[in-house]
Image 1 (tube, rainbow, N blue to C red):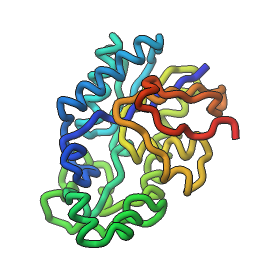
Image 2: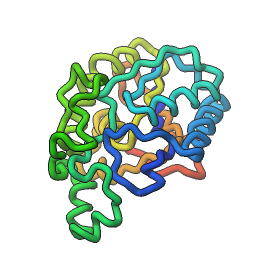
Image 3: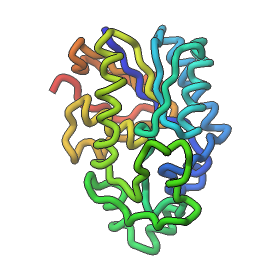
Length: 238
């Protein structure tokens, strides 16, 4: 039976500082490293044997995959990295303190930018410190100036269809170490979630979400391995 494990990266430095991160390459905190190791231990205890892993090109996701797989004694499996699994791009909000942004623009407006499905924040201006258009890891990509969850899904899905879904259809066990919004995008597609449900979906950092699938990639079960840190699960079989 194909198995997919969704693993949101451990706490990052900007998670700790309550800043909009998006595509900025921020590393894990010591707590984030511990979360990744704990996730790997839980996967080992559950007897999960991976065939292949996927991550974004951002350090916090890559190191989460490394630490988790090492803790599970599976550091040797192939790890593919792709920018299409990056976090949602937060546009002009990138780098800003979330509380200060709410005080400046109003909590209702910030909630729309953060939690609506198809409304993106204002675009990021070119030439600033967070302009990644010259970053060589994106030399074959069109770097967005901002993204909504909808446009994040639109860039994640082609990679899912081309790389991840075929691995699962062949019966492999797959780890996806990525970000809150890129994993939301996968969950929306996989669980056929509507727009209202997916924006409410919370995926805890470092807590493996194990999804067992049929051969045609229909979810038959879903569970968090750390029940003490579990959130509400997407509906299965609806």
